[in-house]
Image (cartoon, rainbow, N blue to C red; front, side, top):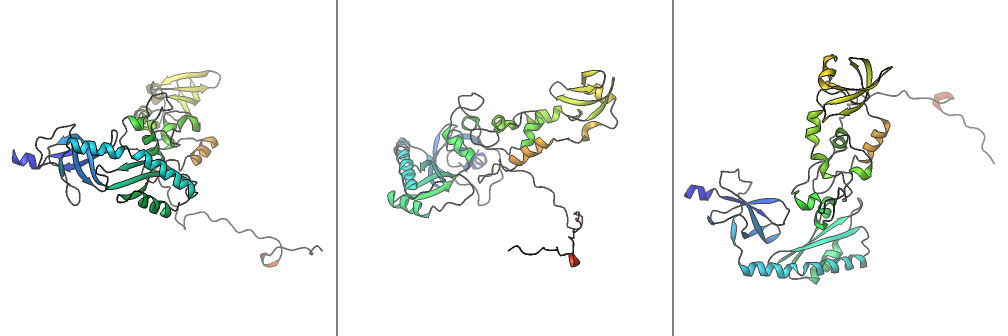
Length: 344
């Protein structure tokens, strides 16, 4: 029993839909899921809710597990609520001061007090890639809300959408990020192409201005369903002759092929594989010029400062293997261009 208590690790969540952080709770064997606890974090003392209890051995992080201080008392919960009531006023004051300092690209999103009011974190986002000088703003906020330690922390557009909430583009009353997503996955334009989704920006862009998180939900299913099926625009052999693939139906396991003098016919994966040599798993994707231009537009849409993911790196061509274009000489000796007389 004593060895089991030593290994008791609890997962604590500090917001309704947030990441789970693990702490050591060997001194609280009676802790249950749903209890509010007081823990020390990088942003001061915080009150979180126990989301899970892990009694199996876990690999501790560097420096070991931080302990759970105690179970939150009614006084602790009331104190946190009193400080939360002041957070909206902090946001309004900070926005007003940022406007006076003419910080045009700055957007103050929210403010968070530690449960004892010793630390104040102001969350903001910026538009564009230009660096914003926040030294004056931080000093003003520090003087305004002393003795609390004021910190300005930048968040990405997906985190902004998660904090603000609202209806999703699909019609759900609450966006996925505000409803159940605790971490953001890396989303690429290839996920939309693999599922046959329209590459129109309004169709694949979320309220945050980034590629929609839901593009990854069924991506693995479509990848598995497309195995053995030829790519669009590829010429293949069919029972009625050779034709061009005009559409792929991965969930049905079929393709539509345009055959000269026959028309458009549908064939199953088995019918295609019976006439294909070699197998079609390594077929090359034929992209159009329109797809390439859209990929250029979205090539950097998923890059953000909070590590939401990015695009894979392009292979680097060694200098000796890169093609060298012959230098073109213009007329005249020594490759110099002949000039006419100067105009007066």
